[in-house]
Length: 238
Image 1 (tube, one colour):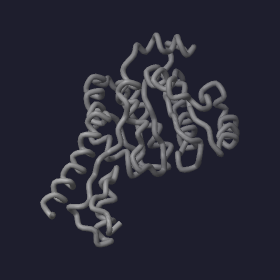
Image 2 (image 1 turned 90 degrees about the vertical axis):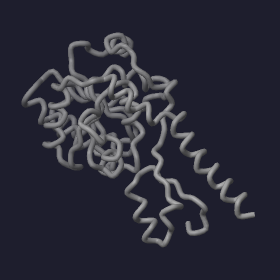
Image 3 (image 1 turned 180 degrees about the vertical axis):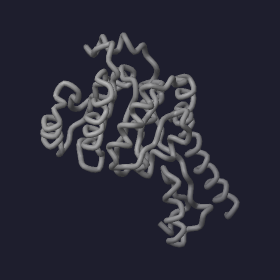
């Protein structure tokens, strides 16, 4: 690391850690990940639900990620159980595959949520935009994230995000205009914030405009800017 001319991190919290290793601050840069604006964009919610054969009258909560302990889907399932005590019009779809699939199925059955929580398996890249547009809110219950690009992809479709303070999401959801943050591993808090998000009138255009800051067109310019500066410094040192 000390031999690098520049180091780029996707989150700010790593910068002080690198400084403690003796790396100068001027060699450390924070640039978030980017998303493809040609793949993620707003579509009509009702038409997307019709395409995916989803109920139009329900509130749909979506999560997409690897089914593993650190992604926190077990806390989302418990949160859905809490939500059912206050409103019964919600359905949760969890996309992805992984080692915890059977464990999550057992939890769904134990909580009697077979008609409320559905594991839809791996979601192909070309289908993701349809699910993002079909949902009402996107939830990221991870215990840890370096960035969490999937929440930006949801925002690009105009969807608010409820996420945990997982190390990455708090650097993305910097305003209640874009989503809500909860403490990781707290199903009760997660349920409360999901209900708030479902009941709030969100400015979807403002969410989309914010997401645009993370398009690859903008992110790539920031990255190439660092390379260009290094080239200038190299020429001046010759």
